[in-house]
Length: 150
Image (cartoon, one colour):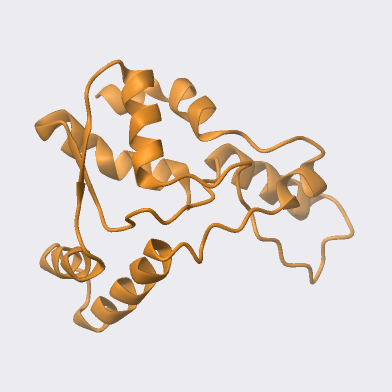
C-alpha cells in the first residue's frame, strides 16, 4: 500500500477526531514509500534492461494498521485511536463519498483480502532495481511529519 496515499487520507480524521478508521483488522500490509516508487520508476524509464519486466514494490516490513497508527502517533507525538470498521462498512462509506456503485463490491473484496493477511508479501524489487534498501514506514512518517500535522 502506498504510504503517502494512505497516511494522507488519515490526516483529516486525525486532525478532526484523533482517530483513524480502517477495515484491515490484523492483516499486515507491506507499506511502500512513495519515494521508492519514484526511484524505481526513474530507473526503469531511464536505464535499459527493464523492458517487459514487472515489479512488485514493497517496503521492508509488513505492518498491521494498529502498528502503523502507533508509529504515526509516536512520530506526531499525539494520541491517535484506531477505529476498526468492516470491509463492508468501508465500501459503503466509499460509495457515500462518490465511488461508483459498481466499485463497492471490488473495494469490499479488496479490504477483505487485506484483513485476512493475504497482502503482506514483501519483495526485494526496490533494492534490486535501485540498489538501495526500501524506506520504512517510520522513516516516511518522520520525513513527512510536518505535512501530516496540517
